[in-house]
Length: 136
Image (cartoon, rainbow, N blue to C red; front, side, top):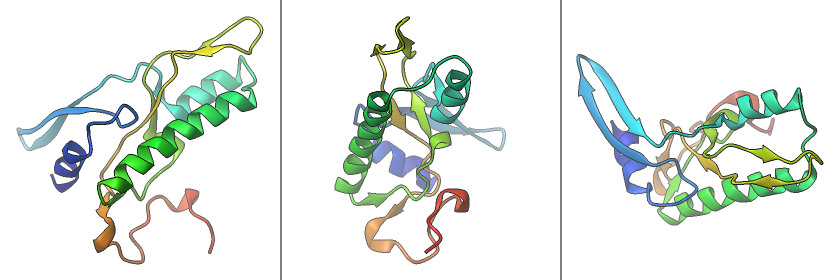
């Protein structure tokens, strides 16, 4: 529930998956959030790898979207702690032209705020998924 309150607080940004409402029902926590048609960035990239080779400029655009989301979250005094492709979502369908160069209507949004912490409360060990952390 703490994560849902935090998500609601940092929600107002075009690069953060909007959380519309959260409630408990029959012992379950239910979330109503924005439908990201492309699914997670991880699953979308895996799907695209079979058909297209991503151009460097497309990757930079995705990175820019995530950096914008992180800057917004940090401005509000929070740390995400679990940034990985499985927690990034494609909000609109990717459209690659026949030449493989044109990419339109793409917005990568950051979601999954269950590991979020206040920057002032962060302690060693608050990090997220060890598969995506530096060894240091």
